[in-house]
Length: 373
Image 1 (tube, one colour):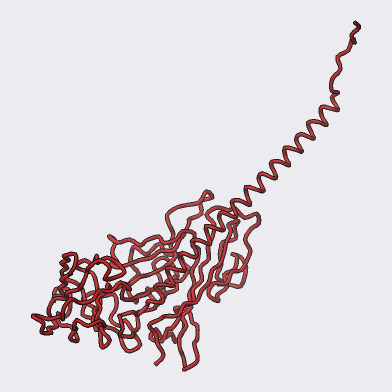
Image 2 (cartoon, one colour; image 1 turned 30 degrees about the vertical axis):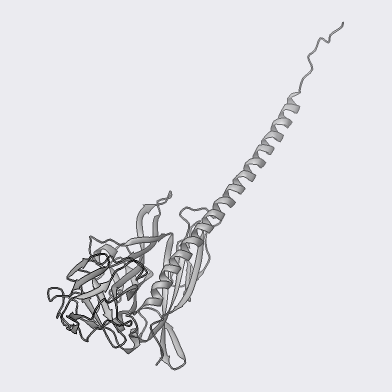
């Protein structure tokens, strides 16, 4: 058998062509993989942003509808008699729905959404955003077990006894001494501070002594009738604040916060939803029988007593820079334009010009407790 004196193989040119083709194929596979990953990241981020925005707007909408609620006594006919010392309002008709423009963390216009100094624990607020304050009696109400009185005889200074049996209200009774509450019927209402609470599991005995109130005398007789209700008083502030967490590029991340009573360092605000970069609001103020004018929280001539609706806009931003192109879009939040930094005229409201992905969400909510007389 004869064999060739030369071993057959690939030439240098053939090897180079094969390597180039292999590199091109690898580059193609990497490009497809990278594109698919970017598309997946974007889809996942968009879904998360939409879910967070829906949750935030649902929570805000529910509380906006309740603004000024005090049982069957409509807020349009007057707010409750304020007996509680240090209550966060002296006129619920005017404070049920208010707001502020956040100039800086410690400077809000009006000074705060409640007309008082900005609480220290809320001073992570982001400048250039809006804050919203809503005050109302809780939807979880409790009926009386007897007239407010002694031995069946009405007595306005007597303890309030309410039914706390399972299923009597939409929430279990968990009120504590020191909290604010409203007792009301269709003729009137009182805002009190509870000075002691004793709950047997079926009946709660609630005192409203002078130690927590300007007087222990309620303004009217409250009888054990279906229209008489007892409820917690809520006073919530919603604002966009920094979270203390930074992204990979060092950007400070923000979110939507909710501050509830009491406004003390021992009760810090709650991060409701991360990723909220901006919040803007407009108040729908009735100016005539068939006329509503939308104004900003610091708008000239705003009349809190005639606010009947709230238009709210949220700008959501991704945590990381995942967009392919720099964001130079203009977003509409509650009828107010937010442009990319460096765009628009002097003093224009802006968002960062970066590669974060952003989505705007808007809704308008009618306040149930402002009825046209």
